[in-house]
Every structure is written in structure tokens, then in C-alpha cells.
Image 1 (spheres, rainbow, N blue to C red):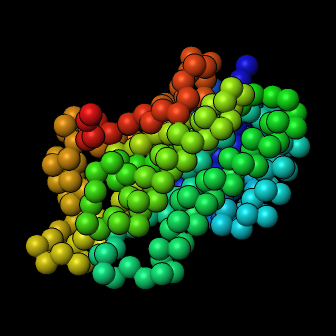
Image 2 (image 1 turned 180 degrees about the horizontal axis):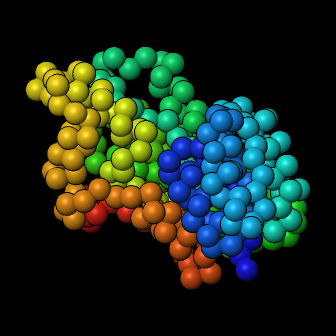
Image 3 (image 1 turned 90 degrees about the vertical axis):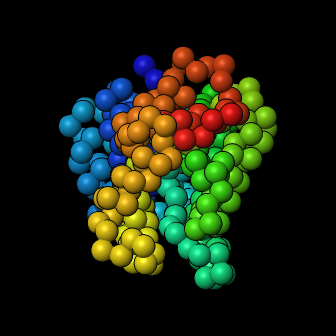
Length: 260
């Protein structure tokens, strides 16, 4: 049976979906998030599956704390061999309204936190002489530029470059891949659609759900939003033995929004 998986951002919608899929597959879980309440909710949702679940409250921008938590996770789960970097920060900002703090915070969570989680994870695996796999969360915003997603999109593009570099650096013992979700009705998109309703005069009074639906119709050839389960299934594949010869790849789960 495959080993336990460490999931960052486990309190959010995508993180919880990944945790639920991993537990359904019989994999133990080390769940990380900055929000203790949401983290507890995810742990409660998967605890009934009979797998070992531990929770670790941490701000992944705090590198020393992150390293300590990763080490704790390896002590708690002696079969830990998977890492899924879900934690991320996003939102719509007009480029001329972006301030230094927002820019730095976006990169601290979306890029720096991802890198140092992988660094700590790989070091712990090496100490134990074990192999493992990493799945990073990027976004279609890394491929398709958007005038309101300068900080978010560019940070997610950095995740793709990091994925490629670390796939080479950590081979052959650790595989590193990425998933690029499309449009999913999670908290990020609820907030972003609400932002559009508030800031775009043409959308004044339009419900966020309607704005989101119109974006799906416009951007997604499959004409349906993606789901948390869609993405979690892709993650499960990339962590599995079926993907044993796959590394440095970017798997789009976006209904055809981005095509070669």
C-alpha cells in the first residue's frame, strides 16, 4: 500500500478534496494549514476512513516552523512518501493597485513556501533512504495571462519552473510534477467573482455565481466547471505507481481551457 501524504493548505476546498481522496485510497495524512479551525474540519472529515491522520498548524511563510513541522510529520508517519503543495494565495488586483506587501505575501506563500516544503520533504526522505513524489499546485493563470492576476499568475508560473528544476535536481529518487486546475467554485473564486461584481460597473448587481458561470462558458471548451474531485483524481494518479516514470510534467485539469 502507498505511504502517507503530507498536504499543505489542507483546510481549504482543494486541500480538503485532496485529503479526502488520499484517505479513500487508504493513505495516511499529515495535514498542514495556518487555520486551525478549518484544519480540524478536514481532519474530522477524513478520520472515519480508518487511516492515521495528524494535524499541524503552521504558516508556510515561516521557513523554520515549516521545516520543524515536516520533520514532525515524518516522525508521526513512518511511511510518509508523498507531498502535495496545495497552499496558495490568490485574488484579483488591478496591476496599478498592487502594493509591495500584497506582492511579497503572494510570492511568500505560492513560491517560497512551496520550495522550502519540498526541500524539507526531500531531505527527510534522503535521511531515511526512501523514494517519494511531490505534486505542486499551479494554475491555468500561469499559462493564460489575465490583467487582474499579475501577482497570482506570475507566482504560479514560477511554480512550474520550480517543478521542472526540482524534477531534475531530485531525480531519480523523488518525482516532482504539477497540476493546473481550471475554474473551480472554491473560496478563491467566490471572492474573485464578488470582487468583479463590486468593481466592474458592467457586472453591478450580478450574483457571483452568475459571473462565475459566464466565465466557465467563455473560457472552458467542455462548458462545465472543474471540480475538487477532478483535481484530486489527477493528484492521486501523479502520486501513484502508475506514474512511476513521470516527472517534471504539468497536468492540466481545466476542461480544455489551455491547449498546446
